[in-house]
Image 1 (cartoon, rainbow, N blue to C red):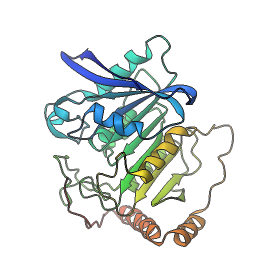
Image 2: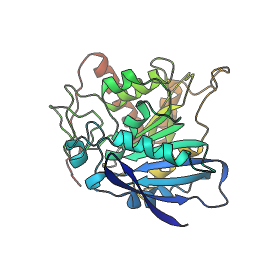
Image 3: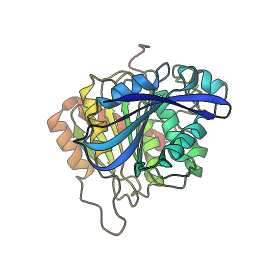
Length: 320
């Protein structure tokens, strides 16, 4: 596979990105897959991991570089955030320019890891001149209420997290439980299940209704009755923040299935039947006892959020 390096001018800066195309045997309408790296990473490094997905969908991979190896994802992180770099505008302009080329792909997918996931969620929630079909967020997501409140267009979303992540905490980042790498604290911790609820509301899903599915070590909550787009979150019971990588087969499998799958459920036809909450818990308990513990922790977090408080004790303090 040929990888080429390119650049474009944006707001007086020379912004760089790498580009590659999937193997000829891939099928379906070609998609543009934009992949956003972690804090301290590069587009080239993120591209290598994205290629390990081995998608069956035909895609053109585009992996831009953040300034000073960082992105301004609102709450995260590093020099780009401190300088107020308009990375949402840059990604939007880059995609618009690529879609304007001859024989451009007809669909747009977005994948972000850690710092890149914060930016990807911001891009998905922001106005843009092109349609975003799906966004996969690995170990990061904005908790900015204003960003969710101002969003208008639904988008299929997958959140991937670890219950033991000490760098971007499953229970949220706030003054009481700060996260790493200069992530800006929220006035209160907003746990990942609460963010899933926000995506579900944006996508017209049935309020509070989630089917539970076991995918390897991941316990996944899938919103039910979504009129606009598939909405789901998968939680690993024990992985650290660095769960995204070329050798992390379970995470790659979860992300691959989401990006390769059809993204929307037509509003004119009823959604397919999914297991009920009790059925999902029974399957999880019978299959993997440890995963059942993760599902219980998600339920407890939801209950705590409804009561207006989050009780969250970090299980891992390792930094990378």
